[in-house]
Length: 145
Image (tube, rainbow, N blue to C red; front, side, top):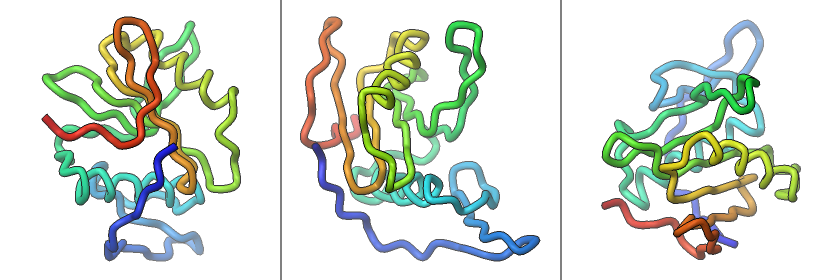
């Protein structure tokens, strides 16, 4: 399990129609501030500020078809124009259990170029490296290459 120290960041939050909205720097728009979105935005800042992953190589809530069902994954990091790291975010109160891991593995089944899979609820973060068909638990996010 990875313990993340989230960097300080001056999030832009505003009310729209009585709902809290947060500005997403990757999507370049305001989105509803839910507990899951809070996890996603803090994780994005960690990846950009601490790990130096370029925002231009990230996609948020990108559509994907898994066994004929339309789904969306939370964060994908690209390297050499291929999905490299998939991240599934959950709200802080949701346990990272086998069901969440299975959801992530279903995404991997349609994106074979992915090298890393991650699930996070903001408090707990699990990361695996996929190497020759095996999954290896990781203690830190990989450095940007």
